Each structure stands twice: as C-alpha cells, then as structure tokens.
Length: 182
Image 1 (cartoon, rainbow, N blue to C red):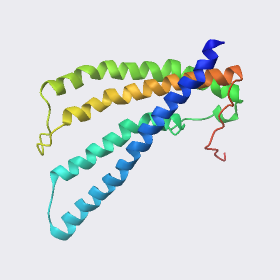
Image 2: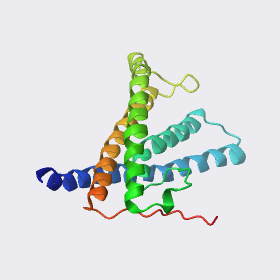
Image 3: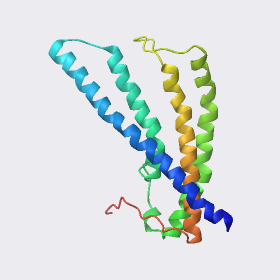
Image 4: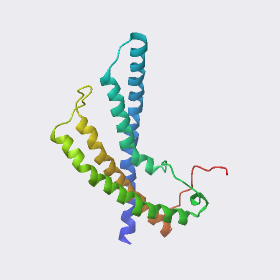
C-alpha cells in the first residue's frame, strides 16, 4: 500500500517536469519563425545571405524536436498505427501502452542512448563547431540526443506508473483523442 501512495506523487512530479520542459521549449518555435522570416526578408529584399542564421534555425528545430519528444509522448501525440487500439477497453489500451513502453520505448531509448554516447563524447572532446559557418556549440546540440533519451526514459517511467494505476483501477483510462472514420 505504501507504494500506491507514492506512485501518484512520483507520477505528478514526472508529468510536471515533462510539462515544464515541453512548454518552455515551445516558445522556441516563435524564435525559429522570426529568424526564418528574417532570413527570407534578407535574401529576397536585400539579397543578403547568412549561414549562421540558417544554421541557428536548424539548431532551434533540433532543440524543439528533441526536447519536445517526451512532452509529445505525455500527450499521446506520437504517430500510432492504430488498427485495434481505439476499439479496446481502457484496460486493453493500458496493457498495450504498458507493454509498448516496457518492450519498445525503454529498450530503444536505452539502445540509442548507449549507441550515441561515444558520438557525443567525441564531439565534446574537440568542442565541435560547425564546419560551414564556424558556429560554436555543435557539441551542445549533439548532447541533446542524450538529454532527449533521458527525458523519454523519465516519461516512460511515468507512462508505466500511469498504466499500472489504470490496470489496478486507481486511475481512469485514456480515451483515444484521434478518432477516424473508416
């Protein structure tokens, strides 16, 4: 019983952390749009080109994607090939989500984290910069691969707790938000 009382607190903390990271990084989309707009205006109005600005848009896009992946998982926003899932009961969906997290999300995330560690370490060893523009901090961008894996693992733990609570009848089941007419 003691674990059941701690699960909701841990779940709330993990979900809250994911929510803060996701909402914080979402603001970067506006900065990315502003820089992209400036690039277009510079190019077509003033016939100027900035590789640094173009790379900064690419960096921001990578940051939004990598740091927002756990938030997207939290809100069930990932693409799902759904043939039977939406027709299942809440318990059936909880089983699918639990098994998917345990046997797909966690192992794949760990595989990517372990596989990319040397890549990130090598980038840090030389404090890698962009070869095109000389833009610094490429090593920090590559570090986001490991940060993304850590965030996905944390959210994976939250997903496991949530699905177990649903299976125990301690939480309501999720309802698929994306109904399609077949």
